[in-house]
Image 1 (cartoon, rainbow, N blue to C red):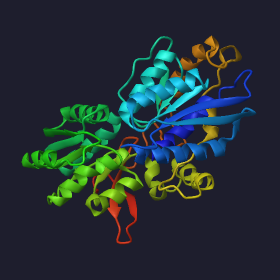
Image 2 (image 1 turned 120 degrees about the vertical axis):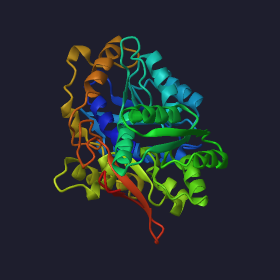
Image 3 (image 1 turned 90 degrees about the vertical axis):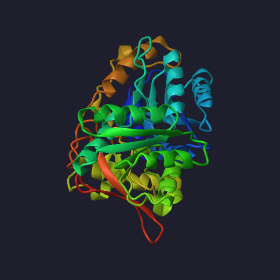
Image 4 (image 1 turned 180 degrees about the vertical axis):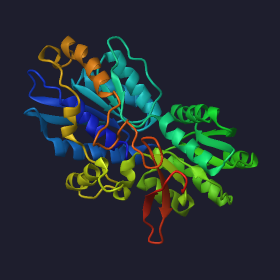
Length: 389
């Protein structure tokens, strides 16, 4: 769910570009409302609804979101992207839940030369003709994995086993781990994979445990990411267990239950907004979004996030000669890549996901969070310092 924290701010950034001859600004949003990654896709949809209600209009023009369900299928993600551009004539694409799906959608966006905000972490994509056309809002996976490795070093751990998805996200997590440990004494002694649709990971868990690692790192997300957590708990694993930002969701914690107790995950500071130091620029904007989300969805979010239309001021607007026109205007296609480049530069932000360092004894733009499962059966996360989790 916390992927939407960056999505909404970046939407405001890109849509803040003044439009010409348009009665409304059309946003094409693709998410997984069903299938294996729906535990991420459904909260994303609730977040975009809150963002649409909160922003309303930009520059006197109404913002309208057209949403399609890709059912957690990469082929459907690309097909939906093309439908939104070719039939609905959207100005910008946003999506989707799941790395393989997002990669497929990004590939289509690059081919069509339409700007896209990627809300799931993917490996860098080629800029394309006239690009770049795609900007990612999640913190880079190598940055988050580096936070995990730094934590392992502080704990004196020497070996780690990896259990992750057998897809693009699993590869991204493993490759980031492999890169991060190169300058350390930590060795990867197991690399086990499973499909998001698998119902059991017993074999993978047994092989990982047989290697006797000091720690285990997970490369799964959402509810499918709970499988190895449960299997490890059932087999009595008591060692350090490292997750990722894609596991920080209410659905994951509800499914994993007490098995998730003590799992350590890197995430943006917003996830532990209430525990951030007084005066932290992210805290207030994160907490303020609760009311906007609740108003749009009739329920409070499981963590804090909000869109910041005012963040548009951190990106200079394009000159009138380069503003977008309705699809398929050459002017819009020429200006969009420059705007994507401008808005994807690292900068200090009062929003939810700052790319510049935010130090909470971590030294990166990520915070280490520990999951806990209370007796009242409510899931929560707690923020812990690098050496004390």
